[in-house]
Image (cartoon, rainbow, N blue to C red; front, side, top):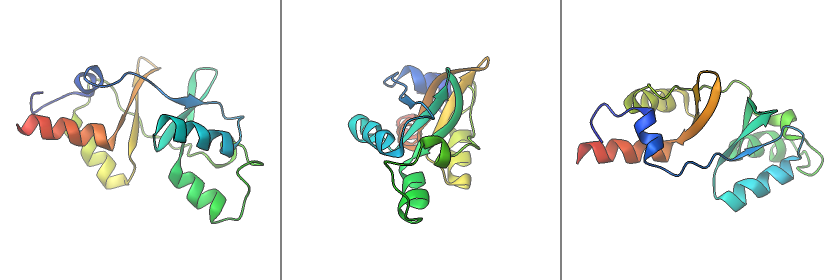
Length: 133
């Protein structure tokens, strides 16, 4: 990949699966999705539209530390709703800076108002390392 790798180029080089859940499922069900997919966060979609993100961090901070039950709490009650997104034209280096500065690990990718993918910090680091070779 060239040094100015775009998010689009990164998406083309990785698995295209987008894992998502409904805001109406329980946190426990969301945790099962994370475990089965071996991922740390999942997009929350309501009728195909991005409404939030649920992560292991949300679980730790908003369920465990607050003494709540994952079987009685809906994803919508604890999901992160202030989700930063990027476009396919954005540069991978800019994504790395954004993720590092704001301390998050996943970026949904939106094109023309539609969700087209998600990139993780692992994807970003891999792309940067490849560009250095």
